[in-house]
View 1 (tube, helix red, strand yellow):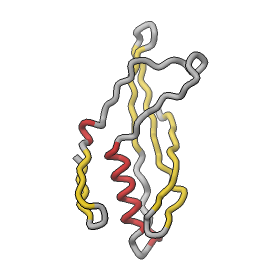
View 2 (cartoon, one colour; view 1 turned 180 degrees about the horizontal axis):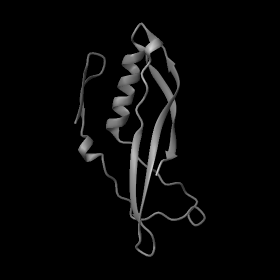
View 3 (cartoon, rainbow, N blue to C red; view 1 turned 135 degrees about the vertical axis):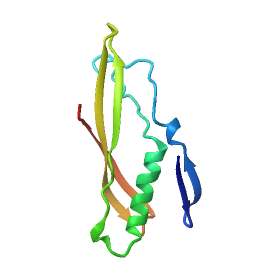
Length: 115
């Protein structure tokens, strides 16, 4: 569990154990299905990265700004012939801007296949 107890945000808990796995019934090649596949980023990762950036920007010394840890996604899938395959991706949040003392944080996700 990821728990946050903050004067600014109050108390919250995110259940990481229930966010670690996802199941998709099937995925078709892009040449067959042109619609993108939606993959949900776990709430616990969003909460910890948001908190890390928010509390870092509120510090007076920004020279020691923290690095955002990547999210590693390991995928296991069967092809049409029932052969098992594996793929690992590193999902890195890239910070674009911070407004004020963290009232708004924007960025994008950069995904790289690592295995």
